[in-house]
Image 1 (tube, rainbow, N blue to C red):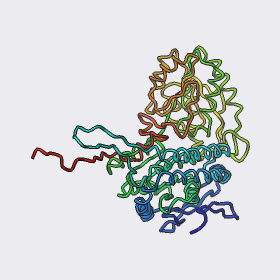
Image 2 (spheres, one colour):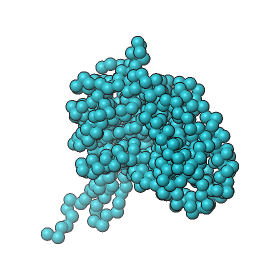
Image 3 (cartoon, rainbow, N blue to C red):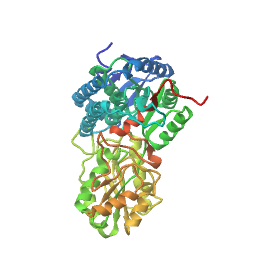
Length: 495
């Protein structure tokens, strides 16, 4: 078995990777590959296996074969392996950073944060191995011990995206492994190298062959590969993080195959700034929430909803801060690097032109250079503008002025999405009351819409999906709850 699934071609620095199936690093059965292009340079970043149906079958079979043994492995051993995997993954921060820059255009600090939180997720999952608990339920039958018992579900499929690739690739499998399941991680077509390196870290940590499997596929084959993975009889659970459009399709496939799905989908997160807010604090939260990873985060602040009494001061300070954020080559000292594709940058240009053409005021940024877009703010955004209605998933952010608290809440809920939200006010009781009326799975008071901790229940409502990653909440997603009784063998029956 090769010592690594990831290797650099020294002549052109292109990364050539293999899949991980049954503990072995292998090419696609067909021998086919596809190239992931660096969005900033236009050069080939990664050459990855282009899986077919046979690869899907092999991964499912490998995971299924080892499940009976792995599911019976004690919690202490599973915990030790997850802790070791966290250390191995954290040690590869420089490697993750290099690949992230080349595959997705993300910056080195973003890669460092991703690696740190992903390692934390593995450690949190390790701590959960002894928290997979049941209960004794009183029975009406004399002499009966009645129990609710949680057991590993089987093979779990994780489908991870490119935008926070180390965090979300790790999250897709960590708690599943802690609960005694074996896993298949379907790498994103946009960052196969990053997702394969997660799998490699777990292999190096000593996970048994077949417990962790990672496959990659060409973009044009994605639909067929996902359908085959979900339909595979060995697969018992599915989790997906990505767009609402694709999430609906995955939910439909899981429903057809009667398999539970955990879906964390798109967002249009509102940040409400009430008239009694600390304006400087709100600007700090808005800058981070709007422009972290160029706005390519599901929780990214997508609507800044500001009370008209303080809007002029807030917008002036917000625009001044945004205008100073450096943007450019992700290899340099910038806050905003490249968007994931040149097409994503062109979409931002369309958002700007649409908004300005319909009456919005450009108060910061607005320029695009190749795949790089400056931190951009559109003030006086109204319904009917793309920036108001659509998830931008980029660094073009709308500011919406409102007359009062009621209008702020109405606009916050005027979207199909419901993942994250934020409320700024010096009156915490008032902010709590507003937060209670916002339709979202997550809401932060006097903090940005972007935030994640390994132990927290993470997920959305409405078009942002259902189910929860993180901590004890995730145990429910990756186990079966069974009713088991021990009864009096000589009990009386009516006939």
